[in-house]
Length: 411
Image (cartoon, rainbow, N blue to C red; front, side, top):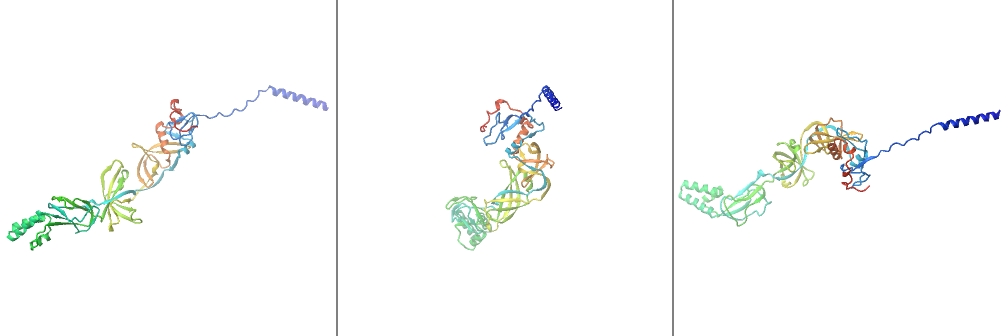
């Protein structure tokens, strides 16, 4: 019985082995196809490519470009996480905020040219007793500035004395008028009429307190009528000449106020009033000049000082705002780069408005729900504009342009 059972088991085993030998062997599992890049692109200059991995001059790895990276027709640019990191891409949300239209800029303090007074000679003669020796000197009202020795003045005074002695009213009036035209004041003429000796010199005095800004005579020089002797400007009130950017010129109006601070007077501010905005634009700096009137009690401020000016302005309401550095200005167009998510970006035309601190208003082109690129956007924008998407990242360039333009390091 046991022998029969053993024989039966042996027969079953032999039949099973024969059946297995008749089956086709199972195919081994095939490994997944390896994804190979078509070429590698310089992370800072998309026009430079390489057929092998390498680094650029800054030590950044070239970015692999694959065949399945199809270009988008709407200008979308697809970037890998490595490239986003290498470019230092940083995004910021478009936000709704209040536009604070206050303008902060710099100004240079200057003399108020409207206060300029010129002391000019009215008679020919020789300069004597020059009391002012250089520009920049302060003078007080009534202070002698210079004297002129004039033979003509002496002769005209003798004519006056003779007319007075003759009792001829017409001659006397004519002689008095000539003395006044030569600059002799009424008090000196009255002293002459009272019997004083004719003066050989005429003394010119400062008509006001101020600073000498121009000196046109020297001791002993011969001058003619009309020669400018001394020019005086007041320092009781100064101008602050502020540079106003072209785009913000609408925030500054005559009659408006501003707050001024200077390093020479720390911890203190001064209130100034806008007297005019000059109509000429500086083509180099794209700024207008605004003149502000600034009181200078005690003379603590001086012409030539640099000041910081803040033009006060009421709130301009709410608007869409993006960081100022996110806006790309080309001269013909304004754009921002919008982050679409999952490494996709697209350049979008916008219309920018007023600046508000570190932000700028967007009037058209955004709806407020986007994220914009605030750092690293220029290369993305260039790629989006030049190829309308990822064409340059997906299509291998001609062999003649690869490597030969590369100045980067080796692999």
